[in-house]
Length: 377
Image 1: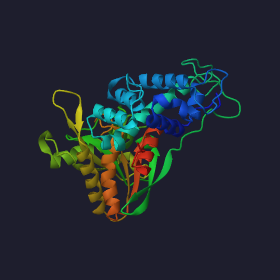
Image 2 (image 1 turned 90 degrees about the vertical axis):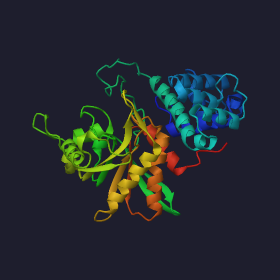
Image 3 (image 1 turned 45 degrees about the vertical axis):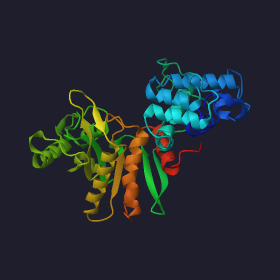
Image 4 (image 1 turned 180 degrees about the vertical axis):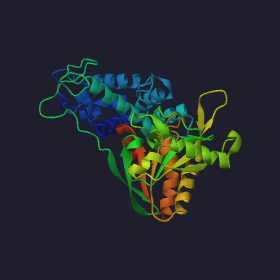
């Protein structure tokens, strides 16, 4: 790996998974060229045979950067970094990590484990980015690319991640092609229906916020030449829907889907917003509860509404409930996919799109969809 290049996230994740299978105690037996290169000091090169203390320090630093909590604890048990677990068999480490999340070993293997290991890989890549030459924070010199780095000879330091990725999945014994978008929701073009997560009061967040629902509200508004909102179209239509079907501020049932137009997003080829009520406000707090079953129910309802339309349509789904709702991305994807897979298996002829903001989350989604077993013990 060149000192001016970031390691590939997928390659880092693959080697982290190898460490999970073997454990820290067997690092010397593994061929980990990417982690070895990342752990090498100045002037050193990776030989393919890891210098195990350096690789272990690298992994411990990445896990410590996860900030504590269940994510860090599960990572420590998964990799054998927790005190007294260096020589534990992989099955025992997985069993203990599953207990951190309070789920069965099988569920952890298929869902939480890849998320946990993906976060370790993400921290490793972030650490490598910080160590690139010229990566001093706030040290802009007016001649680089705007993040404080001077321009590197021979082109950019890293390859840009694709913002649209085709993903081939299997459902009903057939292959289906989905599109995975890796960008903000308001950049979508030519999508018939965009699904927006909502709470059971169907109350939209303020347009200046960063959530999917807020971004859609902001992008769907009509503005004057000075950029001021003059028509809050999506908000107005959603309020009309609730006045008709849920008067008096009463909440709707989890899994309900309210349909509005797309406001100014129609100029980008977006026709409708389906507001999926999946988050139940927790009384007396600013928090929400989201059940995977409600996510699956809402996505199933989205397809039922599509079936009542004139013909084949495109639909874009974010990871519902994975923001303020608190669902782990893998759990949200599993809940969304349960409805998508059932619809495709029944012969539904829909153009399905998935949406995430960050490349590392896109890698997680693509791997879970194409490798549902999540690796072997």
